Length: 193
Image (tube, rainbow, N blue to C red; front, side):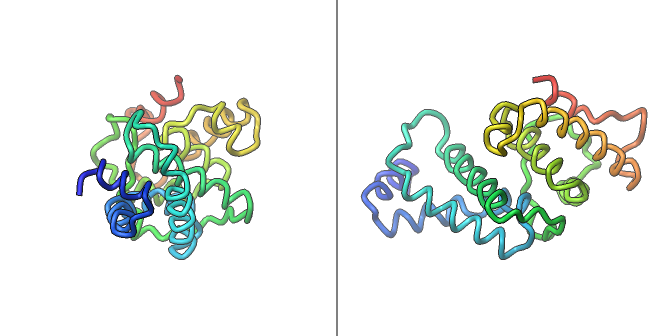
């Protein structure tokens, strides 16, 4: 089934199209949820709630940009809203299920595997971790993060700066990154926006 056929079917509340949309995009979106969730069940709950919103809002998709990106934005906003609502800012994360992390920057040192990055990111305090995920991985601006998290833009910037420094120390401590020869260019490039 083509993406357009799936979209049109979902607009008509066709169960087969909805199942196809879910089957096609849920693995990637579950990986997004894992970065914000406390555990596997929480990530799955976030995913389910996010897809309910996707199905309810599908008529608003205007074919401007990627359909997957539109779904991803809904999922991320759902995760943030659930975290704010439930205040589930715990540090545990099921690393085994977070293997498909996608980072925007292209220059991540090849020695760092996605699992290692996620494992180190989860060691950050929840506020730092959330801002880092939203800015460096999801691509939101500090202004957008401020609105989503009900914080000042300057608070988002400072939390990101502190998260970057703390993450660098963690990576150096785990001997994943060498200091000072190897810089965290993949985060530094993102912070210049």
